[in-house]
Amino acid sequence: MIPKQKSQFDARGVPVSVCEPASLDDYEKALIQFQSYFGDPTETLSDTLQRDPEFVLGHIFNANAMLMMSERQYLPAIRKNIETAESLSSKSNDREKALISAARHWMEGRWDKAAATWDVVLAKYPHDALAIQCGHLTDFYLGDAVNLRDRIGRVIGSWDQSMPGYSYILGMQAFGLEECNEFERAEETGRVALSIEPRDGWSVHAITHVLEMQNRYDEGQKFLEDRTGDWSGDNGFEFHNWWHLALFYIEREDFDDALRLYDERILPEESDLSLQMLDATALLWRLHLQGVDVGDRWNAIADSWERKTLLESGYYAFNDLHAVVAFAGAKRLGSAKEVTNRVIEAANNNPDLTRMMARDVGIPTCSAMIAFAEGRYADAVSDLYPVRSIAHRFGGSNAQRDILTQTLIESAIRDGQARLAQNLLNERSMHKPLSPLTRRFKNKIVH
Ligand SMILES: [Fe+2]
Image (cartoon, rainbow, N blue to C red; front, side):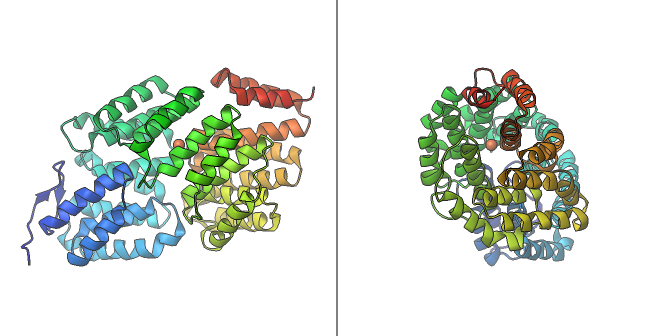
């Protein structure tokens, strides 16, 4: 057996408690997979943990990687990793103990406390790339745009280009800047990241968001298409960048290509991954709002959600909304109402944070989608209008939450609320001048 060493350090100089040297090499490999989305980091470390079951950082890593999927289905495996890590606590260093505590907070629904705990780690270990990335992704799930930007801002001064994975830190900063509407700095930072590591899907994504928010749809399409080899292939995040490309197609009224991407890239086969299913669902809904007949795709995606909702609904309101949208699209209003009832239960019984998400945003948005599907457009407007300004509380990006604004505008148009629809489109024009999508909505208003 290879002797274990004490006081080892990872490639960024962060201390790691006792483990086999080969395990630390595997951790580095898994970390790059986690940062780049190429490959499967949990699979990498599962093999390692078979060989070195006392590698506490490996257990912590795998728990965190699964937590970041935001699904209830992974909780049994996560619990096993966390409990094993806790049983090794006496052999763990202070950093690892704090990482275990953050993971337990997340597992038990205290995502906000997990986010704060990762910052405690980062105050002492600003080079802890695992804590940075988990904190960043949690800020995304919390809809915390300020910390998407500022958490990275608190540590990036300790980094430089000589350190492994620096581009991924820049990519996270770029996305945070973009979500805070600092588009120029976001694009500049993302492009520096890509100059260091072109195969960085998160930096590609951050720049894509800038191009989306500034309505540079021709440029956005070219930007993504010119570098597909850098962000697609064996990449766990590619469906989302393909989704962004489809949004550029929708803007220019190229619905056939948007559907082609849906079939070939966004959901080429059935998936049980909520993150992928919700993007697919949202794309169909955006096309539906544009009057596009998406055929039997609604039934297919609704079937997938039917298989998940018994276990998953009530866990995370952002996912639940998209299940309801799929059921609304497929005209399965019984299923849509069942999920909404689970969101109402979550608003009463969940831990504080996810209870708030369900109560403040989940219930009104799910209700609005059902109202829309039932042709009660005035009710959809009443549900959506007040929630729009606080919808970030249930997470997602500004671009993803645009589904709510587009549904509100379409509801106002269909309900004959011409002045409201016009005002909302004026607001949209202020943010996105020269938008063909906005013009198409305007053309539908009956004065
Ligand atoms: Fe995105």
